[in-house]
Amino acid sequence: MSTSPDAAALAERPVVQPVAQPVVQPVVLAPVAGRAARPAADPAAAPAAFVPVPAAAPSAGAEAERAAARAVGYAAGWGEGRAAAAVREREERARLQAEAAAARAALTERVERALAALETAAAAMRARTAPGVQESADVLARAAADLAEVVVGRELADAAGRGRDALRRALAAAPEHEEVRVRLAPEDLDELGDVAALVRGRTVELLPDAALAPGDAVCEFPGGRVDARVATALARLRGALRAEARTEARA
Image (cartoon, rainbow, N blue to C red; front, side, top):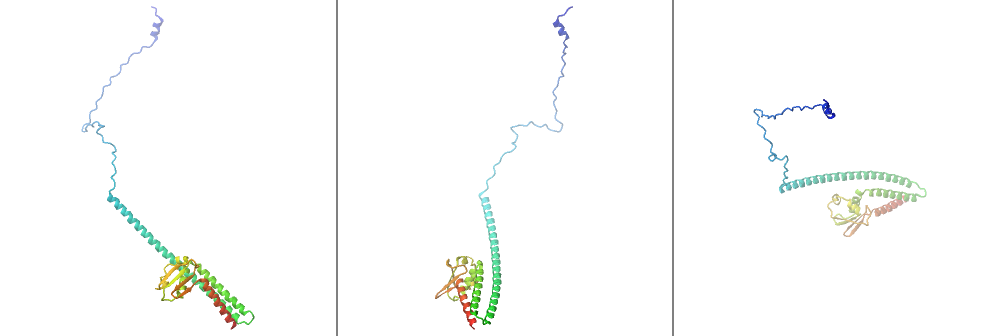
């Protein structure tokens, strides 16, 4: 029997046989004996993971206590710092005064040695009869006065002590039982410090005077006046040295 081409093509194709699929039965898990079954979670009944709670505001009493504690701590710290600064200031002032006193003592010693050498030279000049002795005596007197001026100038460079020295010179020439008024250079008055040991119970009024140079002092009292300026003292010293030198040269 003859077949058509289409039938022949169909005959050559493989035949696909259906495969039976196994039937999967649902398995129900029974709870384990002795353990209660966990109830299903209810999303509406579950607590929130974090509930923000507002912080309580500090009470007025607590804030007042903290403010009082801060004030006490500040006052204590400020008082301790001030006391420590006062101690350091006193120590520094004492050190400076000691150094100034030592420097003045050393300078005074050198001046005394120099004046002794000048006196020795003057004595040797007086023992000679050569012409010009009078002029040499004047030279020695001027040298001594110049040396004294240099010493005074170095003393005046000590700002810590020159005002006290000026006050001491002025009071030494004033009546002890009179009320006195002492004028000082403003910068010396600022550095004067405690003068109780200098006035020793006397009634003394201290005034600044811009017309005075550092180291100068003028003391006024009823019926008199003391000129304790440095230039005046040096002029008196020069005159006294010159007169003494001429007197000794003529002897």
